Length: 571
Image 1 (cartoon, rainbow, N blue to C red):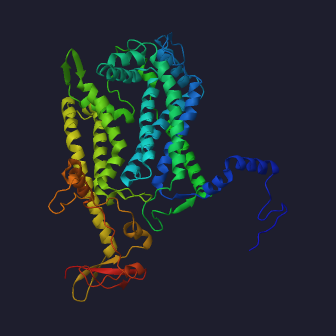
Image 2: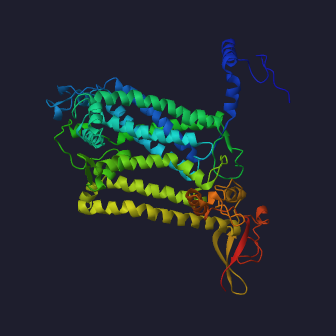
Image 3: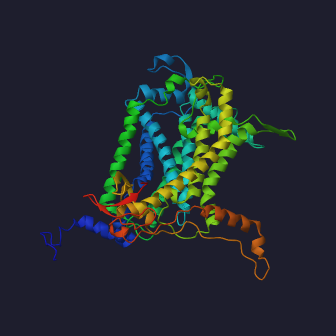
């Protein structure tokens, strides 16, 4: 069909203005932008809700940057003592730092300042939550496998940086609650063997609390860490993702070589723009309706004051919990005291957690022997070992998080603090084990349910009685769209690794290695109960629902709205 020539002279529409056309040609000649733009506009994006969790994190970061920019115009990062004479009458005449006084001014005297403060705080919490959910999605689905190991490591690094920046950010107002967090940070640094006192002097600029900590945290909070995040987020979300095929879950039309989805323009650009507006709208709504971090109620920081029931933001609660349930152990040797009650929960526990997350993709590849490229994700139920490990980690993290509120739990439920502390000490050991077993069994149950759906179809709840007095349930075969995630082929998540067998009675040198035997044992354990893609009955592929005369066999019955099968029961 011939194109329609318009008044502009070109087929299908008028030519762009000469200035625009000339600019586009100049850019293309220097950077090759035309080919990249053409490929980018056609790039397919999966139509799956979990894919957008990372978008929430990215747009929350944009909101954090915009609101933070506004706050920098009015915040004074100084610990110089002043006498407050602002609008909040309850603190008039009280001596406080300039940082705390400027925070009160933002909250009560700057037009829209309190709303922006709360938007900034809420968007940070949403940012952290979306990063965590995105991380869990990638873990349970195996999205960290080849070729995305680098993206996984960048994500872990960003998670650590955002957590650290959040700690520094809510310490800036210099109120009593944030000062308590800084006191804990000082204690953690001081517990470091040999270098603890030097680390405290370096960060605080002298004896705690000193007068330099707020300006130093301010520089780190608004320049150093945001600069690193501004470089890592585009690398993580755009550059590497754009160079790779997007991940997707198994389903009809989805394979390891093809992506089933919609093009970047106009479909995905419309969806992601709507997502940004939703993130912004929800954040503003939360800030307008739900008060958060009312620093004027806490008062200025006083190293000698103690507040009851103080809690950090949720993403730091697990570190608080690890400090609270750790026994008061110390090691004294050669004139030095190592306070294990601080060193273990504040450094060893997070070190093991983040190191474990970072090296897990490489450990799993060593165990499974899987070196394939994976663009097709695993359903969590299909790999019970990985899912159970992830649930055990969630239980471990959640137990520490709850333990951070042991005093509040004891006060609200009238339980002794001693009992709650020992309860969490036991739960931190038994909880992950129970979580692993329960999650593993749930995965097996879901696998058997999928197998039943393939073999028999979906139960309709309709019971029919046969002429001979027996009863049978009517079952409806699943559609091709619904059954594809179960039956479509996909790359195996693990290869078979065995200890080399003796040759002519001579044992292989590799077989004598401990690492080889451990790897083979872990490989067998990992491959146990992996989901096997079932074969569809030839008749089921045509949707007639006949299953023959096997154990659950029966004849096809037409109920007027599609083919169904009958599953026989007792007579």
